[in-house]
Structures are given as C-alpha cells and as structure tokens.
Length: 112
Image (cartoon, rainbow, N blue to C red; front, side):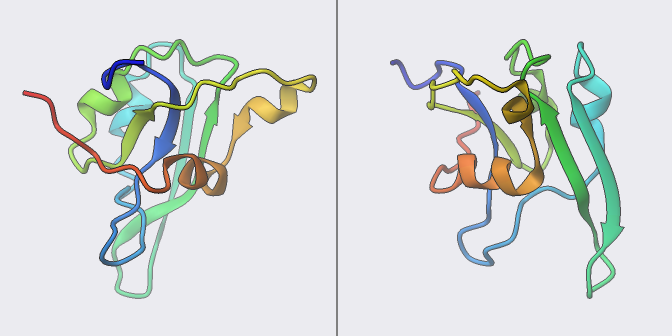
C-alpha cells in the first residue's frame, strides 16, 4: 500500500520519553465528523494534562484522517495496518492502551 494509505488509527509515542504525544486537548474529538473519539483528561505528576481515557469506536470511524490533520501534537496517525475483521463488535472499541499498541513503532510524518 502507498505510504499515505489510511489504515487503523493509532496513538504515537515519543521515542525519547516513552510517553504518548497526546495532551488530551480534545481537538481530535471535537473535529471528528462522526463523534467516534472520546477523550477524558487528567494531570500527570508534573501537572501536565494527559489523557485519562482515549477511546475510538472503530465501528463508527470513517477513516477520514481529520483527527490526524488537526492534531497539533503529532499524537494520532492512521497507520498502515489493515486487518479489521472480528466476530465480536466489542473488539472495535479501542482504548488508549490498544491505540498505543497499534501506533507503536510508527513516527509521525507531517505532509506539507
């Protein structure tokens, strides 16, 4: 598949710190046209805002890429993974941990 093909949604981890790039700013959730993204905030030990919950309903997601485009922190990316089939629809509710696993090893590339 070409590099810009849209696959599964994943959260990107900073390779230096090992923490998610996400700051729970809610911009992705506000801009999702089908409201497939749900985010709640908390603060870490340094007092910075981080996501407490980050859930994507993959059954609702239309893989438009708007979440990736609007994210100012390079935290969310449609990664080239394309295996979506499952027998149970509960599998399509991706939590923060699952999204981080999907995005593991991928770097965010900003296309200009």
